[in-house]
Image (cartoon, rainbow, N blue to C red; front, side, top):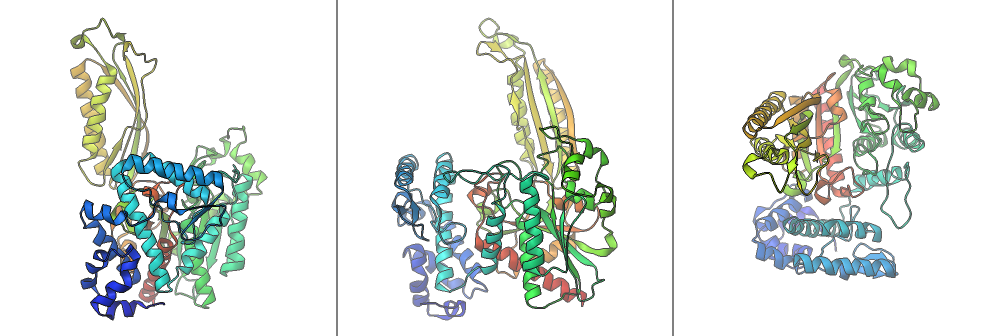
Length: 585
C-alpha cells in the first residue's frame, strides 16, 4: 500500500497514527504528538516533526523507544547478500560484528543501533558496518545515545519514502557519481578494508577524476562546452537563453586530503551537474548561464600551496608556486607539463566580475552542528576568518623531587592555565572558536619539572574584528600569566586569512530556497575554508551546507551524507535557480 502526503494530511487522527506508528516500531506516542501539526507542506517537514517529537521526549521514554529496535548483532546475516534490513557478511565478519555489538551493549547499556539501509537506503556492506561499529565504541555515552536516536530516524525516513513511493532520485544519481568517482584513488585498498580515498594534485588518479567529470558533463549532462583549463580545473558551461548572458558560477574541488572522504568538495560539483542535466532534459534555458567548475586543487596535499584552482580564477595564482616540490622532488611546474597543461595560459583564467551574477557553493558541513540539531541543510552566513600561531612557554627545568612547589617555574603548569584561558575566551561568542591543537613538552621526563612547552593556537570567527579581539585578549592573558609565574613566552603568527561574509542577496536566496523544501532555515558560519572564500575576493558568494552523518566527521573514510539530504540540497538549488530566473525576467 502506498499513500500520498495529501492523504496523510487529511485522514482522521486515528488513521494518521495507524499509518505512521509502524515507522517507529509502533511507538504511537511519536506520531500522536505530531498529528496536531498537520498539514505538512512536504515529506521533509513531516520527517522533521517526528524528529522533534522524539527530541522533546524524556530520556526514559526515548530509551524505551530504542529498546524496540534490533541491535547490530540481530542484523547480521552471515553468508548472505546485503539487504535493506540486514547486513550481509562472511561468517568471520559476522562473528566480529556480533562481538562488537555485545561489547557496545555492555559498555553503554543499550544496543548498538545502525540504520541497515545506510546512506542510500538499500543496505550497508559488512565493511561499512564494521568501520562504524569500531568508531562508535570510542564515543562518549551521551553522544552514542543521540547517535542511536539519529539512526532510528534514518530508518523511519527510509520506510516513509517506501510508504509514499517517494524516492530521492536525484540524490541517488549524485550518490552514483560520488561512488564511481571514489574508484579513482592514489592509494587503493583491499576488499576487506574501508575505501582509502586519496586524490592529490595531478596524480594519475586526479587526472582520471578530471577526465570522468568532463565526460559526464559532456555526454550525460548536456553542457554546451566542457574544457580543462591551464591549472586542471574542469569547466562546464550551460548557456542561458541568450548565450551572452551573465552566468551563475558554482562548483567545488575534486582533490582530497590523504585518506579522505568522498563527499568533501565533490558534492558541490556533482549536485549542480545533476541540475544542468535536468535543465537539458527539459530543454530549458534560464535568463542566465550556469558555469560549473570542478576546482583541481584546494587541499594543499601534494604541494604546500592551497586553493590553486580558485586562485587562478581570481587572478591570484602565484608563479612562485610552480617551483614547489612534492615528496618525490617533482616540481609543480614539471607535474603540470607532464599533465599537458598550458602554464603560459594561467593568467588568462581570471574571471571578470561583470560577467557573473555571483558564486554559490554546496558543501558537506564537515562538522556536528546540523547533525546535533536534526536538520539536513544550513545556510552559511560567513566563512570564518582565521589566525594561526606557533608558540613556546619557557620556564626552568628542575628536579621533580627536590624543587619545592612554590619555587618552580613550570612551563607545563603555565600551559595548562593558557589552555583554560583559550577555552574560556573562545566560548564567549557562539560562532567564535579558539583551539590549541598541538602541544609538546620537549625532552619531558617523569622526574623533571617541565622547562619548555611548545604549542599551536588557532582562532576563527565570522568577522575579522571579532577574531582579532580574541587574539589580542589571549596574547594579553598569556603575557599576564607568564609574568605572574616567572616564565617567558614566544608567539609567532604563521597565517592570517580574512573572513568572507556571504552576500546578503544570495544568502537570502538560499534561505528562501531551503524554506521552500519544508526544512527550517538554520544560519551558521563555516569554520573551515572553501573555494567560495577565494571567489569572495572577486564576486558575491554564498554557501549551503548539507548535513554529514557520523557527527559530521570529515577528511575521513567515514564521511557521509544520505540520498535524502542530497535530494533536499538539489531541490534547494533548483529553487534558487528558479527564483533567480524570476527576478531576471
